[in-house]
Amino acid sequence: MYSLRLGNEQSWLLQADKEFQPWLRKFAAVMRLKPSEPNGHPKIVFTHVNSIDGAGRDSQNLIAMRIGSNPRTKDIICGIGEEAGHEFDIIRMWHSLNPVYHKALAARGLPLHAALIEKNGKGILLAGPGDTGKSTCCRRVPPPWKALCDDESLVVLNKRRRYLVHPFPTWSDRLYKRSQKTWDVESHLPLLAVFFLKQAKADKAIRLGQARAAALINESAAQILSRSLRGLDARKEKRLRLSVFDNACRLAKTIPAYTLNFTRNGRFWDSIEEKIGNA
Picture 1 (cartoon, rainbow, N blue to C red):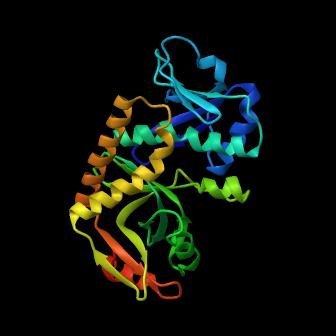
Picture 2 (cartoon, one colour):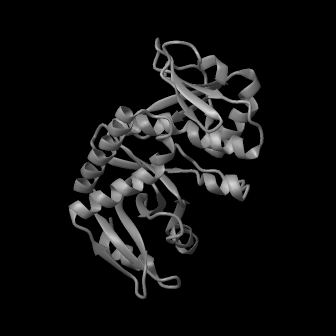
Picture 3 (spheres, helix red, strand yellow):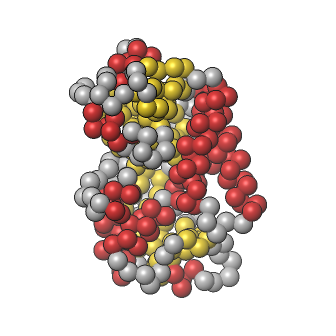
């Protein structure tokens, strides 16, 4: 059993039946989760897919996994199918975060298709779809800057109404490149700003209006959550999309957002520092 605790005090226990414990150990290692004893927090339980076929369970069919809920508790039941192999193992890990993201979404948070870089204990998101330069920027950023993840981040809102951001795994690297990299998912930083990457001939950051920022944040979140829409009925999908849009608008009101025009060999971080100052 492993514990996953987020900066907004959202907590989960991850538990698996005996046959799936080796897989859970790998999953926990990717996210650097620590073993835990039962503590009363909601569980994500990994079991055989046939175990969630019973009546009263509102389940969702995904690739190699079915996710449902226990009607008597707040626990999530993840049913693992018969498919075997490295690819299915990683895809299941990927899907297993859906309940975490959905609960964060209900608490005004958002998963974003964004890299997370850090300076002086503050988080900056570099957002954009694939092949826009997130990984390149993370490789190039110099000390004292530090790249914490290069593809997927989770923004949460704590009780003090402050936005915090967590680094999450680059699952495509684990899937296709068989990367052995791990991510400290429980670590979090205050979110200072979001920069939307755009390759250009000169490095420059341009402040976005609130409406445009909200639209881009919504799009970035939708790119991550698209994988969790499979098997949802129209009513639930609509509710999820509305929550994403509402949370994107709220985030855009609070956190400044910019277009970051950057060059492959330039000092794009100077443009970031120009906007955030000594914060």
